[in-house]
Image (cartoon, rainbow, N blue to C red; front, side, top):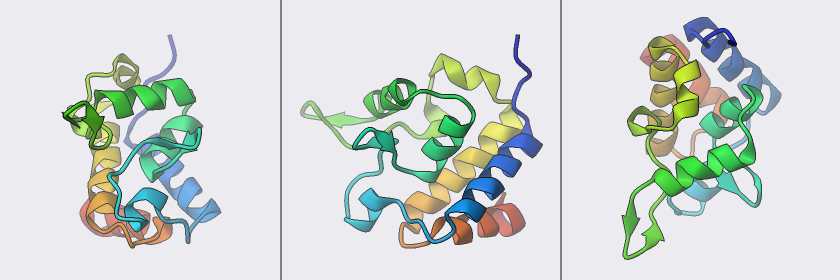
Length: 127
């Protein structure tokens, strides 16, 4: 069995990704679209990128999009990480999952913030 992903590792992955792409912004939110985990076969949001770095496949990320709310059969965006029932999330300890969910919430609220700013704000002020 693999070790669970705790708060320190979740924060470390967030910092590493933000350092690698500090100016990146979620492309869907920037276009006024509902957030998604996958767009054009690649992780679209910061949390999806973290999950991919942690070993999640694109198919698993797409499952989070399919788990999200729907209106008349059309997806309105992926499931909120904190509300997901995806079994792969069991490998993340509650504190690590809370940190990722806080980043997701902040990114979705302030979609114009780049990844460096979102991570900095969440890890120093918010989470």
